[in-house]
Length: 347
Image (cartoon, rainbow, N blue to C red; front, side, top):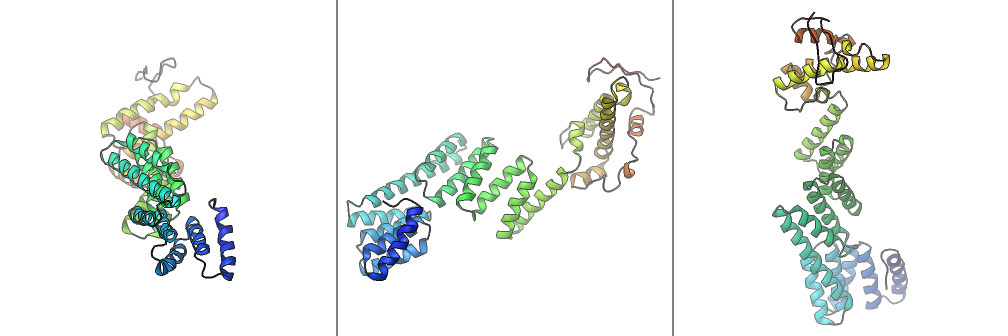
């Protein structure tokens, strides 16, 4: 019995040597063709099988090899036709029987998974794709699609890390599988792994230079650029769709929380850290409360690089005083109060 794939190479080599001495031997040709199919060299395998079928259209082994090539190329319906034909010619052809059974089982399980997915039953779809993957580990092309399908179902179930792993498995089986790169890139985008997303979209765009793929790449590149700046939404603790009032409330809370006067009795290290946070809160409010600056920030501009904060001379206290009606340093902070319970008074 041939063991995939190492033994297949040895058999091909031996059959070539044998055919050099007996070029018309169908048995040698069939064994070589079957091993070529196992090695993924389908055109060569089909060529050998077709040559035999031209001379003997009832050759069950040749029909089996033709079906095997189609099966491994994910043309399962056509493959089954050849397997059935081979079994008609030789009812005891065990390889054709096993291949036919696997092909039918794989097709049925995959279709069940697809139907479950269409019905929004993602748990069932995920399980069915998992079962399909166990049917024939040697069917590389079909399994690549199954991994990608399971990744899609997994993403719907918020199993994003597993979805990324499944896409990677699909790509290992078929490194030309664009759909797997696209699915993995979207998972990377969803988990803010922008460098990885850019790499996948670059691969896709190099392969298929469509306008859609170009747009996806540009979006990933923009998000990567944005991720390298300060996240002002995170600094204020608001969402990216925060209203003007929400931004103001968030600034008031964070500015009071990190105001240097509130930490006057803390260690020098803590004071320095709080001063830094106070400044960042002021920067965030300066940008997000200004519609023009906010638009530029949302579009990916780094406002620090653009000189928005005057080369480091930005004074967060000015923003604080302006926000609280011009009062400067007239607050008394209760250092024992919690972050949400500020005690202060105007001097």
